[in-house]
Image: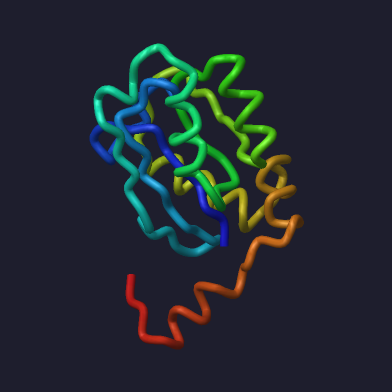
Length: 138
């Protein structure tokens, strides 16, 4: 299982700068399915220019292998990498569903270095199987 966050204000598109993100949609996925597992939202005052806002945002990404955003500052990038989260900067707004499909293909087929590394580092690939045994439905 791979957990990935998307900086979004509508839960449909990556459309936010990391530091100014109104929230994150966090998905768990494997090569066959993806599921929204958490939505982290931030108060407007937490989006001002001070560095303290990054602590809460990075904390919300605990367990995530990556965060997709439109932009990320140097300080935020260093802090994300230090916490084990790969920042992925997109050039334009992109549908989360499309990114999830690309990620599922990367999990299945390999060839995307940060995905391969996240899977090798001990991602729990059997979690979806256990969830299915417990009656979880997509």
